[in-house]
Amino acid sequence: MFRFDPYSPANDADPFPAYKTLRDEHPAFWCEEAGMWVYSRYADIVTALNDWQTYSSAKGNLVDELPNRAGNTLGTTDPPRHDRLRALIQKAVTKRALDYLEDPIRAVCRKHLDALKGRKTFDFVNDFSSKVTVDLLFHLFAMPTDKQEIVRDKAVLMVQTDPVTRKKGPEHLAAYEWMANFAAELVAERKKNPGDDLLSNFITSEIDGEKLADKEVQLTVTTLIMAGIESLSGFMSVMGLNLADHPEARRALVADPSLIPDAMEESLRYNTSAQRFRRCLTRDVEIHGKVMKAGDFVMLAYGAGNRDERQFPNPDVYDITRKPRGHLGFGGGVHACLGTAIARMACKIAFEEFLQAFPDFTRTQQDLPWVPSSNFRSPLKLELAVG
Ligand code: HEM
Image (cartoon, rainbow, N blue to C red):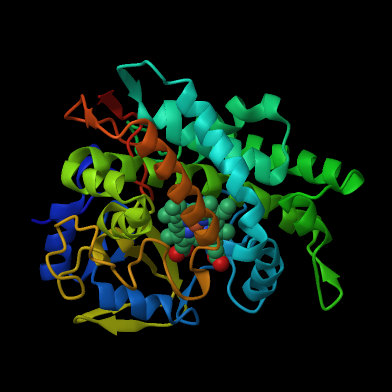
């Protein structure tokens, strides 16, 4: 009997064969392990994303939700509350407002690449992608730099599940609580001493004369730290992996760095780091002969929809010339990723700098260690041999 287990190490390493069986044979599948339905076809996922009235985020969007998030953050509220929060935050995160970040991001990348000069091997995740992302987020929020290591460690732990029980363990919940307290202290401090950073902008932003409440700012900052560090660093790591595994694509980017944004979009389609999120049904829904009840959760497997041959021809081929319009790497609908402009800019600069410093590399390990997570998929380590 077919099983789809989003908690198994085999799924962390390679979910794609199971995704194909899901799409072809079980397009509305009851996943016993997660206790929810799974959508894997592109068209069904898009239908759900465009119907927030039926597919609600207010009961949480993580497959294994963290305490207190449901109903209190951007990703875990429905309109109209969601739209109000989003409009306030969007003001601070628009493309134009981000141009000032280009030079600092480049400087951060060069600093970490300089430290690698002369090395024959290094770990792309822990020596580059993760360091660049943490530096960027600290710069965005003007956070105290002596906290970088601990914030990074807690952000990584928050999104994981226990490798043995495959559920959230005490250390994951404690990491989340630590982050929420850290965010609360940060918000309190910034209220006293506002600056020119993104966090100060959130606190002072107003719509129709209304500001964000302290709790909203605190939980949103917690979410942004999690999304900013884990999603971005995880994504850069899978893109690094793709370029290690596809030397012809890497050589094309070295010869013409203007292709880097196309390679990024294809990586978001081919093996995005944000693989699965959930919604909760507000009414009974019948689909593919299955009757799902109001209150049931539905997992939207973006990583499966992105490999649906009904939408993308030859989906298992990594093709940087594809230009995959409408991929699900950033989700979609009212909850589409709010960090797309930052993520696109940071990845473009990071890979321009990385490929210039290290145009030629191979990975040294066949079997990679993967982040244990029911939501995200990225390598914990990616050892590269360069030159
Ligand atoms: C390449 C890196 C990234 C990827 C792949 C990614 C992916 C996603 C996805 C798939 C969602 C939708 C979640 C859902 O359907 O429930 C999402 C939402 C979100 N992301 Fe990202 N993300 C990335 C980077 C970032 C960054 C850098 C930030 C902020 C600094 C960010 C902030 C957010 C926020 C706030 C939401 C919730 C939006 C809403 O519910 O309205 N993301 N992201």
